[in-house]
Image 1: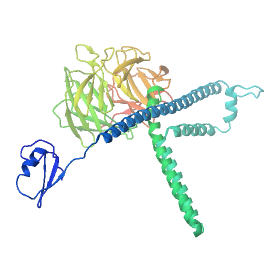
Image 2 (image 1 turned 60 degrees about the vertical axis):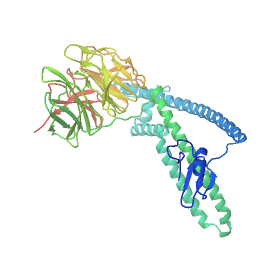
Image 3 (image 1 turned 45 degrees about the vertical axis):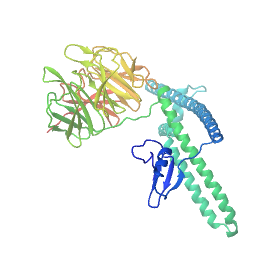
Amino acid sequence: MEISLCQFESCKLDPEYLCKGFEHSNYFCTEHLEVHCGEGNDHNISKNFIDLVESDRVILINKCKISLRSLKEMKTNISKKLNESIEKLMKQSINDFEFIRKKELLISEVINFLKLKNKLILRAMQSKEEKFIMKYISTPDKLTKKISEKEAQIICKLDFEQRETNLKAQIEKFQEDFQEKLILLDEKHKESIADETKKFQLTIEEINNSMLDNIAQLKNRLTYLEENTGYIQDDDKESQYFYFFNQDSKRLNTINLASDKDTFYDYDIPDLMGYSGGFCMVSPELFFVNSGYVGGAYITGNTYIFNLEQKSAEKKESLKIRGFNGVCSFLNDCIYSFAGYNLSALLTESVKFDLNAGKWQNIQDLPLATHCNSSVVFGNKIIIIGYNIASAYIYSVQENSYSSVGVFQASCYKMIFKVRNKVYVLENNKLHENTCPGLGQFSYIATSIGVGERLTCIPTTYKKEVYFMVRNNNSIFKINLQTKSVTVFRNTNFN
């Protein structure tokens, strides 16, 4: 039984002494122990404390100081070792990116050579394009196979979990082989072999612990690479569905890209929805919508999250009246909405909705006012583009600040999307691609049919092609990133 205070009535002093009675024991401070012992003879008294002598206190204090110094040195040594490892991994990653760049350039030059010439002259000195063609003209499958093998080799260096799995499998296989050989040995040798086995198992444990520490450090290095070299893990997710509300309605449409038929559902909610506010996917099952401009004459700030599986809707805190903020972005449990229009002026004010707090919160204003926007998550940043601005803005969540990238046409409808770690911008009849690792400059790569209207849905990737719809058009558009073309995939079909 643990007692925190003297058990004498209303006493708040420490229980310094224990009095063991025949039936029960009591704890008292020095003052009330004397009062307690003033009656009766059944008192077995002992102290309820440890004497802290001066010598013991001095020794422990100095040991604690030494331990603090050791911890500080440990932190310094770990930081030094981690920085050395990060530098090595960064150098290797930069070399990998340079290999890819040179290979892309060579293959592009080979394509141009083949388009212009229908024969290859055998000569003593051949260009690098001619050597490449000689190597692969009769066995072109080897080219794609070698690239795939190189990709697997590079990814393997960064796939720490797979490396851990492979190493564990090797250890288990080694242990199984070792046990089989042990059974075959003569009985007289088993005692010494058992000692060796124990040593081996201890070594394996040390290797395993060291491996787990290295994996944790490598994962930290990968985060560092994302922030400093532009390398981003490809987290793009494909879906055969995308969603949008009919304007001024409660009807949510579901487009099925794997079928020629689409569906809709009328939600039982008090407010009208539409595509003239803000919207984004929180997960494959949750669709976020801020109503924006509805009714043909006014803007509302009604905010809902729709559960697409359960066909339910949860109303959230209303947003300050605004509309035309367009495709929003979901990152770290927050939905980011940039700028917009309130029927009297374009806005720069930008906000985020914290799903955990259930509240809208202000973030740094967009540098320029714009509406009909489109945004996409790239690593730990968000790229925003809008109708009124002539560049894209990169928003750093960590620093709550913006930087600009690319040169585009102002007063033009645009959309931005990401496929396999590359970001693309479609503005009317021009398609642009970011050409440097990370968020480098954008380059114009192709023309396509004009799509001069604002988005009504989130651009969606399905089978490595991008699908979307725009206002006042029942067509579903498709972007083929191999041919760099925009075509009509099909019309909506709700029959």
